[in-house]
Amino acid sequence: MSRYRLYPTPAQEAVLREHCAHARYVWNLAVEQHAHWRPGRAAAPGYLAQCRQLTAARNEYPWLASGSQTVQQQALRDYARAMTAFFDPANPARRPGWRKAGRHEGFRITGRCGRQWEVRRVSRHAGQVRVPKAGWVRFRWSRAVPDGVKSFRVTRDRAGRWHVAFAAIPAPVAALSTGEMLRVPALPGHQHKRLRRLERKLARARRGSNRRARVKHAIARLRARDADRRKDWCEKASTDIARRFDMICVEDLKITNMTRSARGTAAAPGRSVAAKAALNRGIHRSGWGMLVRRLEDKAPGRVERVSPAFTSQRCSACGHVAAESRESQALFRCVACNYACNADVNAAKNIAAGHAVTARGGLGDARPVNREPQLLLQLT
Image (cartoon, rainbow, N blue to C red; front, top):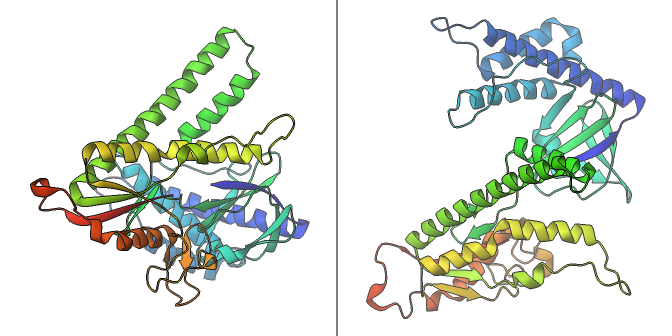
């Protein structure tokens, strides 16, 4: 989730306030319907039934019809998902409650308005996002908008500031030549917020104080939990891959070189040091090296390291090599044959096709008999 400061005009702010009020009103109506439900009574209306009720209400009340139907329906969809999470035994979510004016000011947009072409950059430090009935609303372009944006949420804090947060599917850690995507689990949202809060508290604590020691211990516990979760994922993912495939090809990435600091020296200071440090943290947290190391331990003699040169630029369908075919981090579209697929999956297929003749070589009688013949693991 990437969050940006929003700067609407007075007319646009009036529209945004109306969207917030309508989304909160529809949400509270859904809460009220389920609040009166008791076991043994007729089932409470679901999302589709509530959408039909919303259509009838918009026909009856002009003030509701003047708002955006997209915003109102999305509030019902969010409530339905919140109720599903509440009844999920594996998800410790609380029952969705009432939303109050001044505290819960926001709405979410999905579908067409969440697509990438509904966000545009107008200058070095400014961008615009299209909001229903408000038009193009300006926001500060503090960093690049992530690829693959599926939805965005507009919120207003108690200080009267507006923000927009773009939601995108996290990039996979690895892509398999079968088309599967592997993602390392991240800290849950509430734990991530707590970690950021503790880090700010640590920065304000006096060195050597007991308060600083308690905060450091709490941060260490969260980071240790994150490391344990990542290690558990690597063990399960490597075991599954080693059991399913006979020959495993992985990109021979030089992780040490990729994560070198950009700080430079006093005579020649580096550029974009903070951005490079964040990238290095993301690479280390992805666990690439741990995953490959555990694969080599669990599938001895069946893991081959392959050079990744030009695999991201070659089309797996026609073989044409062009840097322009890699439209983004996630999309590959060949400029010669117009073949399109996920960029990492395309690279995985390239390496798998180029090394198919070496599959299962030298394994002798110890070769498994019920595994798929070959897999390429594209680390991203």
